[in-house]
Image 1 (cartoon, rainbow, N blue to C red):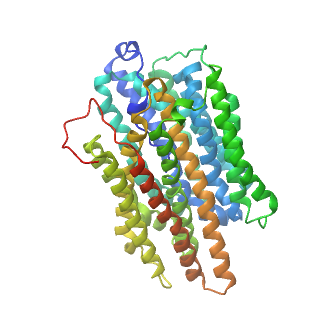
Image 2 (image 1 turned 45 degrees about the horizontal axis):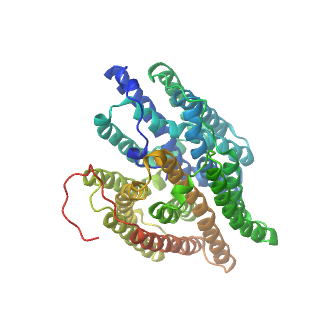
Image 3 (image 1 turned 90 degrees about the vertical axis):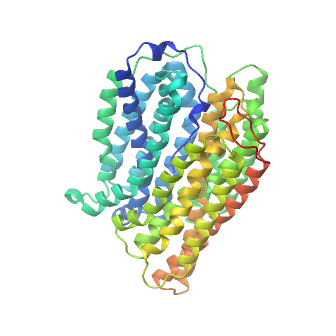
Length: 501
């Protein structure tokens, strides 16, 4: 799943901008940035559906398939925080247009890639461009609307995310199955070309100028250390099995720990010297942010990986075409959309209860689905996973918003933007980590089943059911973390019943 942040966490902006534009321009600009957000979010679900076709068409290895997903997520995660601040420096509109142009170009390169190495490189570029584009979307919207108008406007971000989640699998499956001009999976990337061009033209004309402040600075040292730590952890997890788990894999993973410690010490040094910090030390020592950040890391590590291996399970293991595969996972997307609407109506009520309740629904949905997969024979009945996927989708959307709100509620106003950006980066880093871990579990069990002489369907069912154990464990750990979060009180919260926390 792509980044879903609490829009209220974005720091307030001067009123001059929203007062100087007409309602017509305001909403036209809003539509433009929503289209950009939709293009970014839909890309994730489309790629998951296309992975088996890409693997078959390019003869890609298992680790290369993982990098198509994990590489994008990792670069996106590492770029979110510095690019959010860089937008403050050079101007939000300018950086938004750069990001859209880069994302569009990278999408074309993905669609034209002749080898899997080129495709992975283009996906890394696409992730970097997405990291340039997406932090500006929320900030631009904050500039477009007065405080009293923002709640209704920001609700559109949740609606757009829900629509992208629903549309992605079906659109991707339709494009691949149609095999337009014999291009198989390539149109899933090339479709971004006209969308991106429209966003560029409309954005240049409709989004008001939002100048930056050249006096601001980025913490490039902290960014480099954080990037090295994440790469040291994730690279061996993705490549380890292909290389036979040599000693250097374990050495790299071990090195990630002192690198993370070094990042914390660097941020302390930056704070002591009064210099810019990627994540303000004050956030790292705030209870809800520290505990909530680890909870979010585990929580968001589960689903991106699940849908990667689920696409392989359905298409390679049981021979479903991409459209059938997309339609099979659609109940989850519909559940996310319905749960998002309900979550929006609940506002800030009963937040910790909603987080834990949503995680319980996710656990039940995945546990139920795992039982269905374990009972699968020679053929797969896609109707059998409709109820558990829908339950899991509702659980996901019920828990995301209150999790973000609870984590960010205690963040000082001066650090709100940094906190929101850091939390989105943690979300994406969790996704990359989960892809690496769950893929290793899935492919290792698949290789063992195949070596033992199991038929293809049994081998894939065994691998899928084993990989899903990670999801179940992740949701239990996340629920424990959520229970450790402190209850928050909002001064502007609507009246609500007294609840014993």
